[in-house]
Image (cartoon, rainbow, N blue to C red; front, side):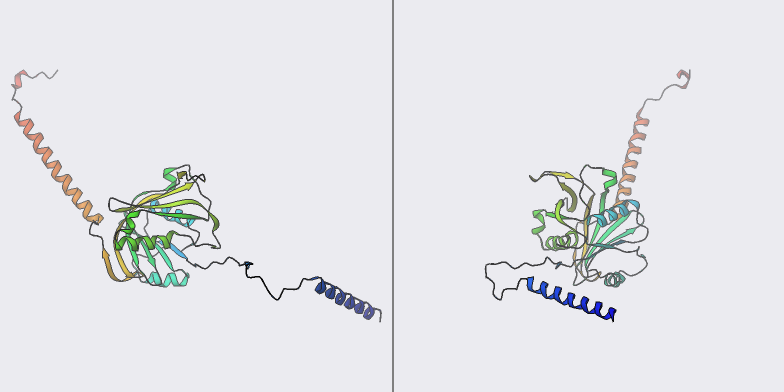
Length: 290
């Protein structure tokens, strides 16, 4: 009987404490002034996810470049190396399994030529670039630095608005390199700038740190150059909607350079031979071999 009395007293005390707390709570007003701004919770609405991976046989320099992008882009995911023998359409299934709607794929050929594919996996398009003049952050060793996960400013050259193909390239680059607001892995501030400039019929990339509020910049790295090859209508498929007329394949460029060197060497040898033949012939007995 003593146990039941103790249990009954505890139940009565719990009821009294619950009634006291309900009385102390403030009641929610039934009306609200229209000038009062309601408190809204910041949400991640622009759900962009970027898948970054490469093919087998990629060089160490391109691997360092890819790892730099993985560290700078907070909305990125990684994947194992892709078999070059497989069809590129398989990348659509990989992106779907990873729940990514943007893809950055590095394709290596002949251990020397690297291509970057940027694709919108929802509706397209797909851009194919030849990556040239790559300099990683480890090589440059600049003094600039940025925090991991911070969002970048995107700066584009006014030349991107002059042609239809350049406007498409600008939109794809903005969707790929721009970290969405309120991303779970991103920081809520900007401390570096990605710059894209069109020069010599190519796109040049630079990364700068915002040092002071007055806009002074210090370069971080990496550096590379993108030479546009083609634009496809769909994600890694579809019709070719644009082909760069100024693009020269690396194999053709190497073949032309070899032919030019052969021609130059032949001309130099011919000029050297003519100079030797034009020299006066001396008497062998007069030669001094001492």
